[in-house]
Length: 104
Image (cartoon, rainbow, N blue to C red; front, side, top):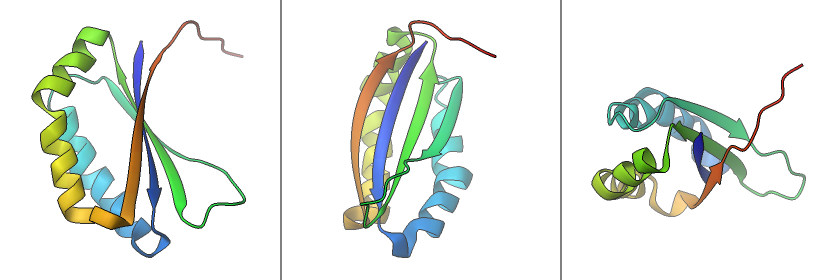
């Protein structure tokens, strides 16, 4: 499993609006691309954060699926996000490969 992680520092003044937009519009539209099988929204817990940090994990079955997203769709989604929230959200991306999973 490949995890495309997008970490966002979101201005507290727009956090609720941003989360609502992510859940009701952005993520559902992105899932229609067929590249991801699951999305998880996580809040990063920290004491020294002036904004709220959210990590969104987009799960895909292969690097090929992620590459298809990056080549065909990512620019459009990133531009739409930037035009809507601009200076209020700072983001960076990381790619993770799941090696193993352990459950209780």
